[in-house]
Amino acid sequence: MNSTGYALICDDHPLVGRGLRELLKEHPQLVGSACTISEKECLQHIADHGAPSIMIIDFWLAQEASESLVKTLSKDWPKLPILMMSSDDDPMVQLKCQQWGAQGFINKQASPGVIREAVSALLQGLGWFMPLGDQAVSPSIRKNQWPITARELGLTIRQGQILAMILEGLPNKRIAQNLNVTEATVKEHVTGVLQKLGVASRVEAIAQLKDRSFQAW
Image (tube, rainbow, N blue to C red; front, side, top):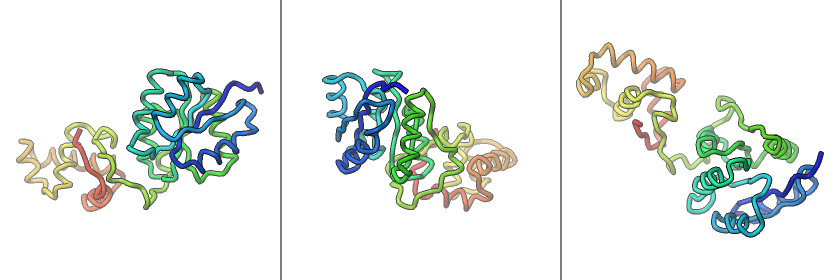
């Protein structure tokens, strides 16, 4: 397997960056690697040295810069594979990475072999995402740092409106009055919302989203 270029790491924890460089040292598809600690430093490194063969970016960069960096890289170097990393395994973290334009996500606690496999997959033009249903929700995730939208939950506009009122504690009768629809219509939509969320009751829906800022759309 021929070497194709270098890996560029962007992680504001230097020890993590050095660990990844050591891990990728003998990767057959890479001739080397470099570390940066911020969006600005990363983009400057690319300007000075050329685009890497793969980007590895910490999801929790300081000043919430990871989203901006991924979107900039995706726009300016659309063929550059981007692997996101985080010690959080909440499904919403991976979902955000996919929405921003990354081609893969892996937990920092994954074994060295699995991390190398993920890197190899992206270098071969493949993706590396776990099925969302297989990921455990991490209690350490900073859930309140971003809002969650109805679209991200797979809800329609109407379902999003109804979920917002469910989260406010409104009964079906009040929701029907607010939307100028029948209670039967509201009940039908509520059933759809609960199915999309994978819960059995309104109480469970409220509990599932209690730490999130919900946007109806």
